[in-house]
Structures are given as C-alpha cells and as structure tokens.
Image (cartoon, rainbow, N blue to C red; front, side, top):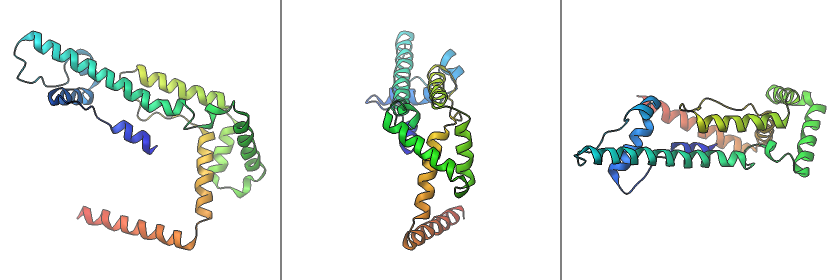
Length: 198
C-alpha cells in the first residue's frame, strides 16, 4: 500500500518546464476540461495558432502517455501476484497453505478476534476466482474511465485475513520493551499534532 500511494502521488517531470507545468495542470483539471477544452495555461512564447495547437497536442499526448505508464505501474503488482493470494492459487503450495490456514481458523474460530471471524465467514461466501475477477474488472474500469476510481476497492477476504492474522500475531508476541516503545511513539505523535494545532 505504501508503494501504491507513492506511485499514485507521482507527478509528471520534464526538462521543458513549460511542458511539465502544463501537463501537471492538465492532469489536475476536471475530465470534461481535459476532453473538450484546455485544462492548462499556454505559455506566452507561443504566439501563432499553429504553435499553440502543437503545444496543446503535445501536452495531451504527454499526459496520456504518463497516465498510461502510471496506471500500468500501479496495477502490475496486483496482477503479478504481489497483493493477493488469489492470483497464485494455481500454485499447489500456496493452495495447500491457504487451505491449512482457513481450516485451522475454522476449527478454532472462537480463539480469534471478531474481525478475523467476519473475514473467515466472508471467505466462505466467495471464491478466489470471483475475487480475482473483481481485481481485473476494477483495473479495466480504471484504465477506461474518465473519472478516477480512488474510493473503489475489492473485497478480498483472503488477503485481508492473512494481513489481520499477521498483525494480531505480532501484537500478541510483542515484548514489554516493544509495547513501551509503541506507547511512547504514539504519545509523542499526539503531542506534536496538538502542538502544531496551536
């Protein structure tokens, strides 16, 4: 997720600063302005209509190329098995481990937190193939739509349950020193937040 957010925040860069600024303005403008009009300022150095037209075309082409490259970089990790076990379920070892984890949770359900129990029940009502299709559908929508789908997410109980088990295991096996460090860090963070609000 950290890597995903870093990629999403990345902005267009170019040695031509006028082009760089225009592409950045164009990418932040509304999709209607991008499609029908000009969502950026044209530098004064372009005097005649031909030069202005070439610059506008260049900005749109650069924006589209940058958007396509960014989209590919954002979604490649998901479609190359880095985010969810549903993409590598065909590998026998992964399938066996996933089956073992879900069977163990199912047999000891009362020992787990309500959140993990809910995820386990959610996983019983879906299949890895269905979750995988949701990822692919979201990718297609994101690639082909005018509006960004920032708030869209795939309900993937398989990935969520593995993450939750790992997080809760780490919390349960923390030493006293680790807990104290964590409490101290939260206190200092709260202190600095309050201090900046003054």
